[in-house]
Image (cartoon, rainbow, N blue to C red):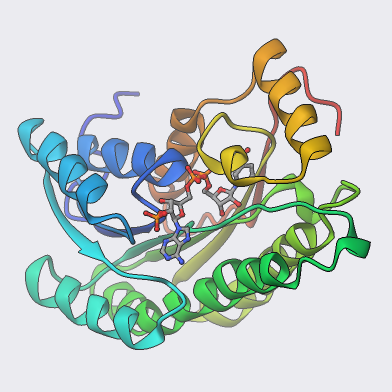
Length: 255
Ligand code: NDP
């Protein structure tokens, strides 16, 4: 089946779009015909992404915002509705991964992960779900796709807060699916294994960094585009089909 224009007429919002999974997904959804709103804090990266998408014939707007700021996300939702139309796809993807032995009491890093991965995710749900419901009523279906991680299920010592935050994402997604399905809003959670992005570069713990560097240098890990394909696949399903949870592993990875 040709995938060209399978998302024509869709209006997608992508958080965490300035790099990694979000950036690749914005480009792919736009290639497939969706209008995209790209959201993150780094405006320069978003502007460059919008320029690339437009050069490729797509439609995109950049929204510089911090997902921990609920009011900023409310304003973002208004901009999307007025400039692109009612959002019918939210790729709720902004996130941060940090690691440290719990005895080091890096409460700043604990808080940052809770703020971005949990509160930020819910701020986007709060800002955009009303549009998803409206879009589903008008078009027949809408999609909320949340980025979790295999860390939601698996055990990674020194990553307790990150893994816990992703367990929140996965279980909240399952419950939101049950709540919103009756209104034709599909909810999916994607749980990727390791993908080479900027994510690993924020880890400050030397042991965790050494482990991640070794895996990234010596293994065939996922590419951001692999997850973008998963998002496009979910959004292109017939309206009766809701993949609740998609775990995407690099072939080599055992855990
Ligand atoms: P990146 O670090 O490349 O991307 C993270 C994105 O989140 C950036 O665009 C960043 O933009 C944005 N972001 C971070 N904090 C905020 C904030 N406060 N407000 C708005 N945006 C923010 O990593 P990935 O692409 O890998 O990560 C995307 C998601 O995938 C995350 O949720 C991550 O947990 C998850 N994931 C990643 C895996 C991997 O191996 N890479 C594996 C499993 C899950 P900016 O800094 O400009 O604000």
